[in-house]
Length: 240
Image 1 (tube, one colour):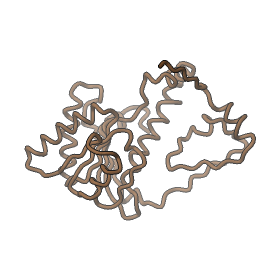
Image 2 (cartoon, rainbow, N blue to C red; image 1 turned 45 degrees about the horizontal axis):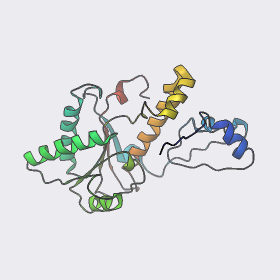
Image 3 (cartoon, one colour; image 1 turned 30 degrees about the vertical axis):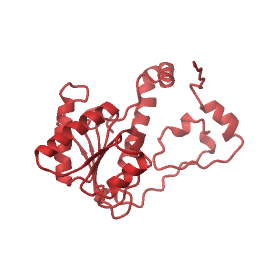
Image 4 (cartoon, rainbow, N blue to C red; image 1 turned 90 degrees about the vertical axis):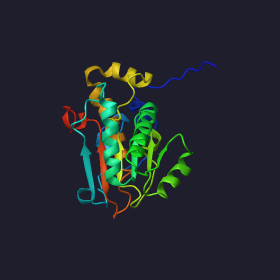
């Protein structure tokens, strides 16, 4: 049955009138985007922003690896190069990999290619995919097999807690920009014009990328690598 959904392009005025002017609120998260206060209408004069840091030693326990030598993700040769790179990293890590993808198609293609490459090399790293089991059972199976890998999509960007040596490598195929055809975001982009990419797409992608990276180090003793296969993270003018 057809359904009509109505959503405001700018929630700030509604939130300010209906919530912030009537309540004192505390908003907390490990991945609050810098632009949140402005987007949700928090008045600057009465808003305090506090960064309490992290108890984890990311500088010494984590490594960010950006595969600058890979083709641009929009290049036809990108997928094959990504599969080779992912296979090499899984081999180096001895399994222990959460490989995340921005689409189901990319996940399926990578799983097929990596399984074949690992088998050809005689390596016994079981590759679980998001299609195999429900999420809790899948996380449990991966957690109990240190030689295995788990291939998944956006549903695993957050809410996944796998501490210890079972997970030492987290990868993602692309910078997770929001879909260009999302009707609400498209309308907001149209309204903002030239500022849309900076105001909408970059903050959302940054937040999702931070959530992806957050899957790696879950305790003070965890160590590992986050690998991004999108060379734009190291080359594009918005990389910072």
